[in-house]
Structure formats: C-alpha cells, structure tokens
Image 1: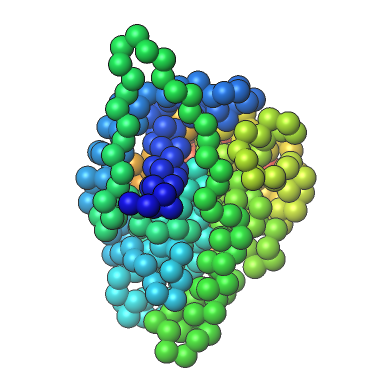
Image 2 (image 1 turned 120 degrees about the vertical axis):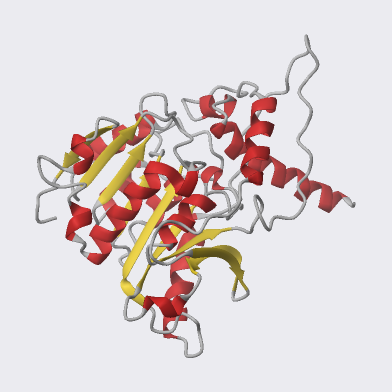
Length: 346
C-alpha cells in the first residue's frame, strides 16, 4: 500500500474512532468541553469493543409501514440513501426528505443506519454524507490499535478535522428535489418539496444548524449537539457561532442526553437563546451516545419520527407528543422537557 493509501486508511480510522470514542464515553467526550490541549487519552479497548459490536449488528428495515433499505445511489456517489424498499407501496403518499449530519462529521454514511432506516420506514428519504464504512456492506476496515502496555502512557487523542461539510447536507436536499423533477427517476413525483428537514448528531448537529437557514427547510432536529460559545470550539474547520440561531425560521427540536451528555450545556444554552421560533428541548438520561445503537434507533428515533410527521405532514396524533399541558413527552418520566412558543396551533 502506498503512502496515499496509508493516509486514507489512517484518516478513515480516526474518523470512526471519533464516533466510537463518544459512544464508549471516553476521552473524546471531554474534548467537547472547553478545550484541553492535548485532549486526554481514551479507552481504546472500549472503543474497539463498541465498534466491533456495532459492525456485527444487521441492518434493520424499521417499524414503519414501508420497510426500508440503505444504498449507494450512482447519481449521488458521496452519500448514503435510506428509503422505503418498495416505492410503489407509497401509493399516493409522498416522501419527506431528511438531510442528516453524521456524528463526528465523519464520512461514514452508515454511522446512524438503525436510526435513519427507522425514519425512512415511515415514508422519508433520509440521506447522510459519506459512504458505507461500518456494518453490512462496508469494506474491510483497518485494525484498531492495541492499547498501550500497562505502565506506559497512552497517546493523546485529537479530534480529526471534519471529513464532511454542512454543504453536503444541502447537496442531499438539492439532489432529492432534482430527482423528484427528473423524468425516469425512481423518485419522480414521489417527494413533497415542502417536506424538507435537517437533522444530525453531535458535530453533525452543528452542520444541520448551519443549513437550517435554507428557506426550503421546514423543521430541524438536533441530537446531542449545540453551538459552542466563542473560543470554546475544539473542532477544526467548524466555524458556526451562536448568531446562527437567529437565522432559524422553523420549529426546532433538541434531543439531548441529560447532564452527562457532553453537549448538554451547549444544547441547553442554544435553547435559552432561541427566541424567534417554536423550540423544544427533551432530555433523556442516556449521555452523548443517545440511542443510535438501540434496535430501530431506540427512543430518540421514535420521537424524531413523530416530530417529522407533525411538522412536515401535519399529523395531529403525532403532535400530541409535543403540545398541550399533557403532552406525551411531558408526562413520560423518562424525559425532561422544556418548551417555548409551542402553542397548540404550532
């Protein structure tokens, strides 16, 4: 393997390590607090075990009425697409579109595959930047490094620069809407161009917030993320500031992992600052890793689907989870909810 191949392999490993270090509750978590330099070492054994377990999980089709699949579409080679497997079963129903930002801003478009397949199974086209780098369909991956011998110092972990950009989410939206208009496309006439959402996890949530100002976007869902205060951002190449919150023009949902979530302070500060659109923050005490590795994306995926069904498709039953004094999440002891401008008519 030449130097270029070695570099790509190393880069791919570091991107995946960024995600799994978070899932393992390790040193990358500390990295998103006001930045230590260098960042402390993380638990390589836990990271490796989490990645190996995740890679062995089969793809799922979701629990919605339209069993989903994940695929690479030749006309969008740098994204992974999640869609109902049998589009004919949609009948007269249209697809909504969800542009997704990956955890770690990595280029593994399968990093949240269980979550995104669940959303797709409810009649959505979910699109994540990158290629299939984990789980079924992924190419062989470089071996994880062995942990340091007892008594030796572990090398410090540094967050790699983002492998994807916020504009990759906009490219996903552009592609979907173009396919909806293109005669001969499998999506021709199947997408409602007003049903556009952006979402993402951790670093990918920041990408979603960057794109949220796009006038085509109708709602925003942010998972375990929030904009850093000035001077506190350790992610190279991520320049978004709190002023982006003033550009929000749609109802916005934050799903955070409670006080142990390293994005909790940033996300709650975003909620405090947002005063121009309806906004809700719901905390589930699961930490930064959320429920992405749970079957069908776990509780967060179920809540995200209901929010999308309400905000994009006007589903009043789904709205009951979020509005009113007795809203479903408000009554659920597993969740802690705060809302602003969330009247019954929203």
